[in-house]
Image (cartoon, rainbow, N blue to C red; front, top):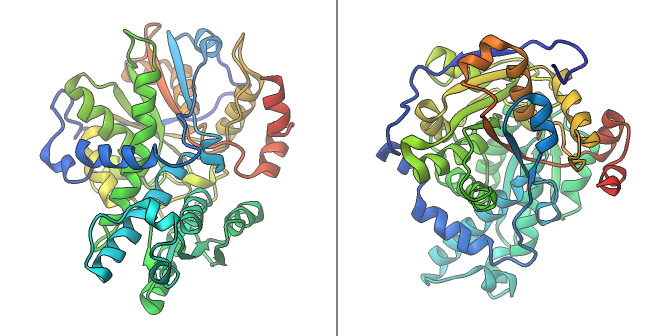
Length: 410
């Protein structure tokens, strides 16, 4: 039985370049690897306020959907920023500042504690970090800039909400609104950085810009590591459904599981909005492909038309399948999680957080796709709930209740 009120369209492409049982390779290790992850984990877990985000068992939803288990990694309250992006942007800001301080002073061993204490205030206050954002990454960069003592300028595109703009400004950043879509704002941020001597801290990579996005993605991997320790003993996910965007989140999740479990890793499915499906098109054509247009999806954090080249280094061989889902399916999933199925606790999930769930449920509604993905009554699925109500007004209008009201029931 479908959990949707009406039938939604679904597109699926099988990745012919996926390497299946092959172990994590040298090509991928150049992007993300265990040693770099261990450094990120030691650092981020030392920050005040760190605690693992919850892994919610959605047993009621799993029963209704006809699978064995659904686990939802709930990032809605990570460091008080409302999304998983807190793990990436701020960590990359720290790494950049330490490298710049050590370059200027000739010293080594600079730590985050030094920056928080203001030991290098004379240097950091003259450094400006910048990026383009749909909202969440910019908030993390601005938060990191405030904690570690540098300046921050964030670029947002035309359709980013005022609520997201104010959330970034709350951390002391200057916010510049640009014309066009997300990819246009990426280019404008990079051009302005070159003109004004700013340091770009982007979550997407492109020719000539690779080092910082590695740090961003390596930070994201922490939530996957947490989830592996939270899943019940003796169980493993058979499938992972993760939302796309530029690919940084999906690549971080894929790489961590691939390096950890090799050929025994779960089947990996990337899900995107049908209005912004650059990864889907890249998989279909066999090369990084740009999707043009206004990318006007409600899944704001996924409104990206250009693939991160570093992410593609992982996903080209590591992702098994790519799906696209319509906005209406995301709205249905936000409401479904807020209500709770069976005895499930209600979950606050933002519009970009539910793409993976929408892909799973739509695949189960399409028997041919379900068979192609190997979904069955024995399937155990891991989802990454990447954000909460990062736009509280949009969430309230969409779900019909505020996030506070949903959590009060939980």
